[in-house]
Image (cartoon, rainbow, N blue to C red; front, side, top):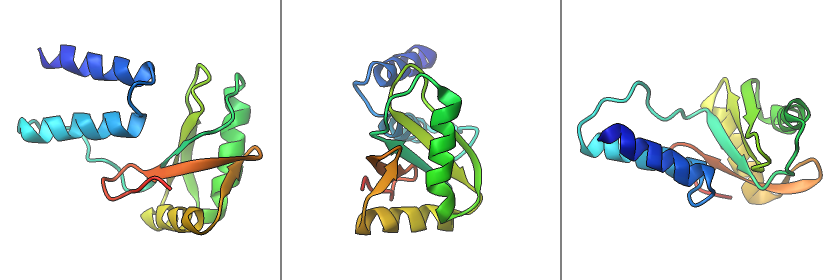
Length: 129
């Protein structure tokens, strides 16, 4: 039963009816209400980047993402969504890097491939900027 509900949540994210960060929060929230232990807590060292230029070349898009966000701190990993979804994730070594990126984006624009993007922390306190 629960697997079916999780599958439906994933489908709503894939169809663009719910953002990936909202989907993640919904799944974690439901698990908490049901008393289910998830394997991991939401990471505090990851930013969701959306509004990116849609690209078929995933490695090029990933390179642009890393180049843009490495000024905020050492990047442990980065990925962009396939199928031209226009979003990706940057995982930093330190949560302080996320805070620096959020502050910078609040004060001015962050551009990936000459396109101003919006970023959000995966933790519930992270606000879209």
